[in-house]
Length: 484
Image (spheres, rainbow, N blue to C red):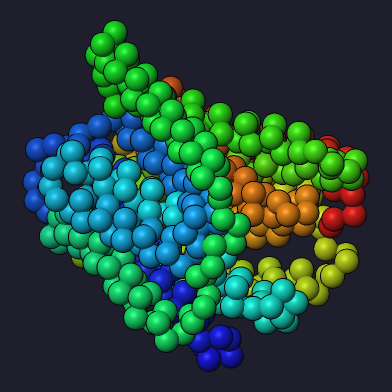
């Protein structure tokens, strides 16, 4: 056993640890590499020399794709391959993506980003489904098992920026990208060898095999979408001369269309009762709140990272903290506070705040975290280097807000789902991240590099959304029809 859980949990725990290690290790460097001057001295060496607004927009779109592709990955596992094979192929594709980024060429860099997003789509939803398969539906250890599994995510997210940040500072960008590749390779080897002993029949069956016609339809839609994106890019290049920011705009249209189509389809499901339709409307309200939340939260790796590099005093005596290390602060706070929040909800029981109320507080928290940053941003405009404690404080507020929204939203997604649609609701929940990051990327591309404007705009948007959310709490509670 593994901490009193099925032995298979250890295999999945370490696979997810290494996958998150590779993802967060690279993500902590991404915007810094995009904005680094192309003639930069080593280490860390030359970057791509993009302006901050474009780099942040690319980062936001990349994260949006990472959370969009699980829709496809979940379908492939459910209807064609089974979870076990989907996770293996996903891990291999992710590793190839990181190796591609370790090659110091611009083309291999963009190819690597695409491969990582595709591979994550195959691995991320399906490894969680395999954790679920280790337990019976009513097993008392099931929730605790998922908690252990999420600890693996946060440990990976904590360790990775420290390793890749140190490599970046001492050896250069591509050594750091290479470390992410090696991490994912260890994860895949561990998954294959450990799985033989501990996973037995877990994830081998295809839950709901697709008919040849269904497969043709899905691949036709996929092919059509890819074709349309390429066609739009070619037309844009012919008419206006192609810019990388144009690709960000084209992808944004497709990313935003997906949840719209999805919601319309779900609302049109035949045979839904009035109560189920009402719950779906409530979920749509939570979805919009979550999108606004992630739009700001995910700027930790873009806006806040570049602010840390340009305007923050990172020296401690003779030592300078590598910028990526700041990305390890949030996972540490989550490891500390997640058990405390869980204990509070358990203690309060039925008296705990409702899901809509927790969401409203989360939006207020994330808004305040950015409004607070206006003070050091104004200071930085005078050329001053601001104290790193501003960023530590912001990450603390954001962690508390995240714990009011992220685990609560995951749980509510499954409870508000119409029967047999739990998987689709979870996929939709992750799409809220895609929508938020896509809209955030578009706003950042238009605001430019003015930090005071960025923090004011996003902060006021979230606080405004929080006020509306507080006003709608009673109505949303009624619409949730008995779900707390």
